[in-house]
Amino acid sequence: MLLSAAASAATPIIVHRDPGCGCCEKWAKQVQAQLGRRVTIIDDQARAALQRARGVPATLASCHTALIDGMVFEGHVPIADMRRVLAQRPKGVRGLAVAGMPLGSPGMEVPGQPKQSYVVTAFGTGGTRIYARH
Image (cartoon, rainbow, N blue to C red):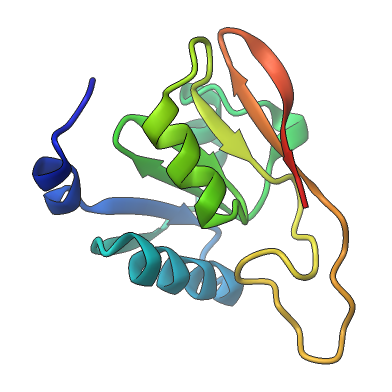
């Protein structure tokens, strides 16, 4: 499903998070600021069921799952990678994930702590593959 730029901007971003997780709020604020769209956060104790229903591999689980324009973003995915996949819509890719909660990823910045290296993984009917390295 392709949305026009105006329709896409009007569509809210829904983020299902582990209840009370603060880093999810930090990530959501960055997404809202950089994508210019309203973000709604839902505390979801049944998020594992949502992840399974949306095809998120269990090995890529993190603390929140965002639904944007029919795609799924699991964890602290950088906004630039989100923009790129939303624009390109690669065949067989249902979404992107950053497994765990690596320090230095969006929403996980900690002053005085070095950033960890991490990968952004694409997943979907085409399997999983490295989409970006940070």
